[in-house]
Image 1 (cartoon, one colour):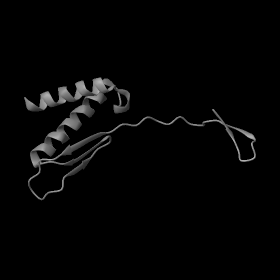
Image 2 (cartoon, one colour; image 1 turned 180 degrees about the vertical axis):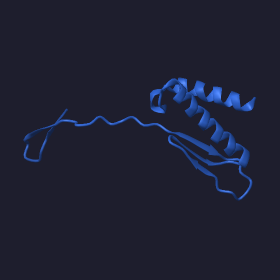
Image 3 (cartoon, helix red, strand yellow; image 1 turned 90 degrees about the vertical axis):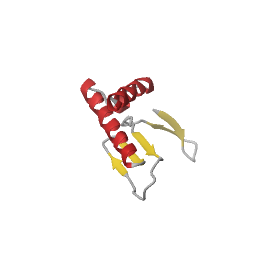
Image 4 (tube, one colour; image 1 turned 120 degrees about the horizontal axis):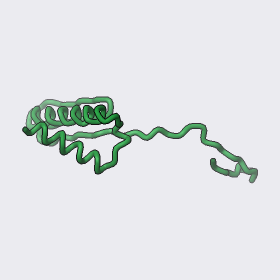
Length: 98
C-alpha cells in the first residue's frame, strides 16, 4: 500500500492488487565463432547467442541439463540462489566434459 498526494494536495491511498512474479533467465554468449553462421537458441528460460558450432552445442546441453536438474528437484530458476545455480551449472558442465 502506498500513500500519494494528487496535484490538489489530497491524499490518495493506492493498494497493490497483484504481486509481481519474480522471473529469471540464463544468457549464454559465445564469442569464438570463426565462421559466418549466426547461432541463436531460445528456451523456456534461456537465450543462447553466438559461438562456434561446438561452443553453441555445449551451451545448449548445459542449459538443458540445468533445466533437467531444476525439474528433478521441483524448482524454478527464479527459486534458486546464485550459489545453488553456480553449483548446478558446474555439475552440468562436469557431466558434459566426461
